Length: 89
Image (cartoon, rainbow, N blue to C red; front, side):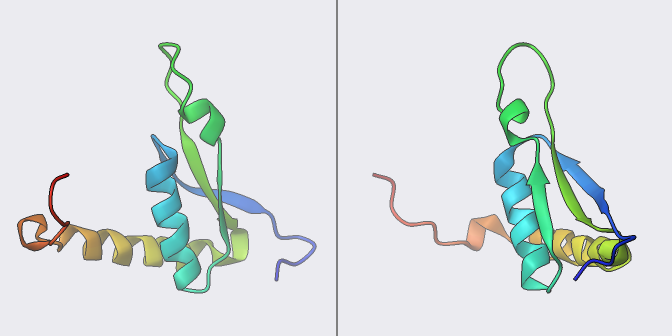
């Protein structure tokens, strides 16, 4: 629970809502409250760059950074040639 002096801070930005949702989910799996902000502008197609920010409480920021590093390491270890994604329809 956040204290009266606590506030949300940006952990990282991603170019789309899908990536942000995966990171938010990974953080929540580790007990860290996180939300994604900016999804509407990230999907806007008008020759402008958008971003989705993953926001966490300030008191969780260090733990969130560590969790993000662990998540990135786990994802980079996936051998996608070995993953069964089903048959092409």
